[in-house]
Amino acid sequence: MFNVECNYQTNINKENEFIANIKQKEKTCIKTINAYGDKFKDLNELITLIYSKDGKTHHHPLTGPINVENAKPGDVLKVHIYKIEIEEMAQSLSKTAGIDPLENADIADRIPIISERISKNEIDYSNGIKLEYKPMIGMIATTPKKENIKTGHAKRINGGNLDIPFITEGVDIYIPVEIEGAGLYLGDVHGLQGYGELSGIAMEASSQVILDVEVLKPRKKLENILVIGKEPFSGKECIGIVGVGKKMKVEDSVYDAFQGGINILQELIPTMSKNMIKSLLTLIGNSFNGQAFSKTSESTSIIVISKENIERVTRNSYENLSNELQEIMFQ
View (tube, rainbow, N blue to C red):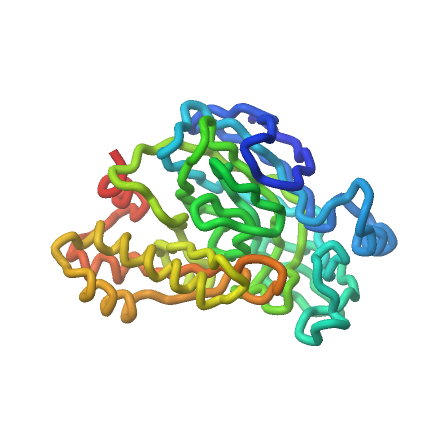
């Protein structure tokens, strides 16, 4: 299997040189570093990272950009996540996060908690508390054609710091391509995070992510990132439409996801009017926050529609939702 080591990238733009080349449908292991900027073995090393504002470490280091074979501007990258193997993990607000708990009482403090995985489905959190093990990818992006995306931030088309638990093992992620080679980035993996990341920090972890990629030609320009697979909160197969707010307001990202949801339903039910689709989406769409409360970056949301409801409104039966969507939306 081809391995890509983390290069501690600090931003996403087309000036960055590719660090690796991957072929389509070739299983690849992408290694990521936790949001504190480096690996740690104990509490002392973690505390050093938490309070290191300057130096070699950097908040939310990324692995990338990665050149994807035959990816062209206007294409869509389909990323399938096979496995997320978590390494060391901890929860604490870093000084590099850009916000101080003393300035905002709603943000979690800097008291560090180191956790570890104790079984296939559990982590030992703290004080005897056992929590579910639900690994997810916080940051995934393709390179924008013009803008620069700093780590910890996101753009509507390209992605970035989405912090959406749906981006997990077994799912397909559809991301628009804006430059030759796509320029794929990965990072900010979490061992566990609820929707919203409400206190501003999750179970930050280093990882090895096993994935493959495929380049698709859309029949119509894709305006939002899509996620298809088993949604972790409901446990159902769903399609998710990602929204990114231009500001730090959750309603901006919800509106963006709502508009994207309308576009997807119009593709699935072309005979239905736009106004009727809006009403329908209110009944079958569920809105979840991604990055809801960071105060320092764009808000993100995802509108989730179950496969069951898609089958009801389209009056079709889908054996594989991702494959069926590809038949409709891609050449």
